[in-house]
Length: 280
Image 1: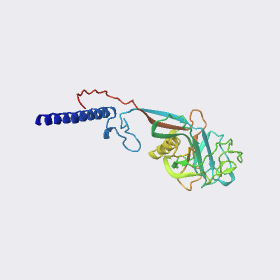
Image 2: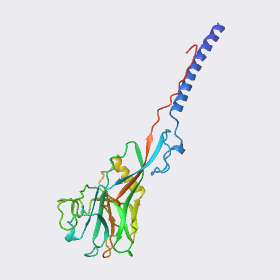
Image 3: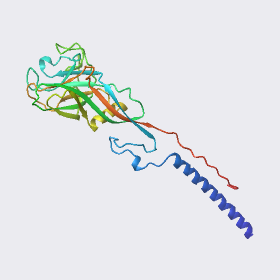
Image 4: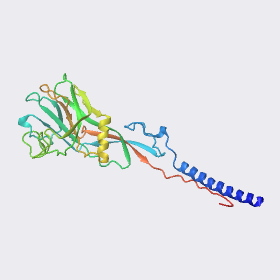
């Protein structure tokens, strides 16, 4: 009787240990195939600037691409010319004041098509680059700010020589269709800014985490891509203190530089195992 009981107990524990061994081997295989994320490999901060490797060990490839503007124009709030379009001109003008009177607001619009960006990426930085060629008053510092446009617009074919036949003006997003808000419908959150005095004949870079977040939103569909609006931070200004940038010049066209990381997921590493057991 005792011997029979001992044989039964030995068989029972043998089965238990066999099942436990199987579980441990399977768990080990899963850990090897899908490593547990570590804090050192995780995303740090909203700008992903220290994003070296994702939490599951995937390889990261960082790249920077530059997009040229697809639409540019500028317009003025000055009443006799507020319905003029400048889409065919080769300049972009922003700032308060103009040749006719003070306290006139002039704004520039620029748009980029980023549809060719690859899938499965994280945008880590974006820079709007405008070539600063003329300052109408070198001694006056002007802070220009970049905003997100929230209504679509058209470049137009005007040269600012008369009332528009098409395109964007102070009153219209595509003449004769009016803006929801004159001067361009926009989100009044400043995305980036630069304070400029004398012309540098060089690209001025507008960048920030907020601007990058907007470009990321265009990419993932959070925002409609209606481009940027550039305007003076002031709400009134000194006579003739505008800043002028190139627009359609092939060499100095406005640019949007985007840096991103592309995640490449490796296949799981399945570790085979074998188990020999007389009794399970």
